[in-house]
Image (cartoon, rainbow, N blue to C red; front, side, top):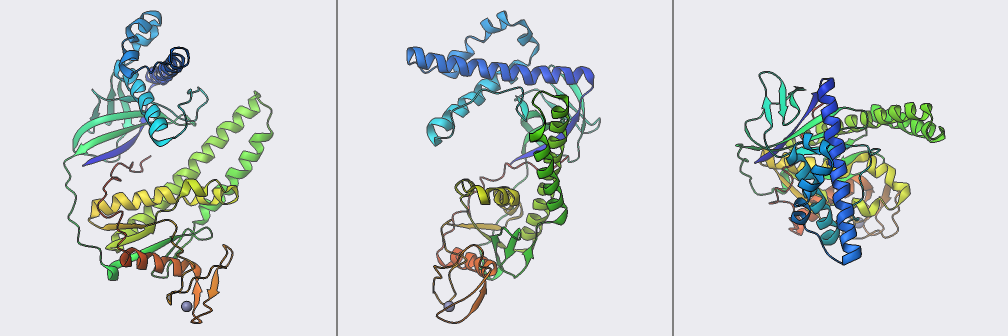
Length: 382
Ligand SMILES: [Zn+2]
């Protein structure tokens, strides 16, 4: 089973310089190849393959001698990434590959081979860079498949190590409604469980978000190119990182507990990208990070032999009374409603959570049960 481990790296000055050259060169090559492909298509109506481009690499290295100091496999990975970006564009109609910029918030390169993680000396050996100090918080047993080295906006360097582990997934028992929990994603609360438990967004996260908004406002007022603007950019990036770390910790805690306590977890597969077009809700929905929460639930269920059942995204879960009456008039701000047919009063979030379990089992809409597509989620380590 493949698993990903993420470690913080502490390069010395010479290594930091080499790392920066790798980030820069990989970006250069990606942009060079993208320009080449685009030009060939526009002027000759020709689609250049990765191999067409790879064949020109020795020439390019002749012209740009500094490319020879870069791990050649990291360079080839950049071409592979460009290929995947093209595939996504044509197959999934995702955006056309864009040029990478020095100003991007994240820089990365990949090492598909010759990386050694040494737990006894707390180092990761990278080709052309050498043994870099690292905090190896979690040990693994298995074969390293590929390593992605990345640098965040605040200058922290990480290595994400993808490992083919020898771990065997535990066997699952069939989903059991009596042992199942339904989760309704909320805007006011983070989530409501069918057990009646409401999980609020933690206070520290709200506080950090408030600070993030303030810093972001301040930043936008600073004059472009000024040193004050650069300072505020770093402050803003730091706060972004803090919020995202706090949020990830929170999501890990909640998802771990829910998977441990239940045999089957039922969720709605919300159309997050569709919802994000509504700008008023977008902030709140992005904040509650439903997407990453569901993927955590998915892989944790796989690892622990539990079931995750996803139901379709357009089920009227908060509007449907247990008697079968649908309350068409329910709006987002109605937290409680009374059924006109049977007189039952519902808390909309709790009703939704219960309905999610009901739909999951009644309709046998078991999309998520046997799909271990989720195993590749990074474990949170800093
Ligand atoms: Zn009713």
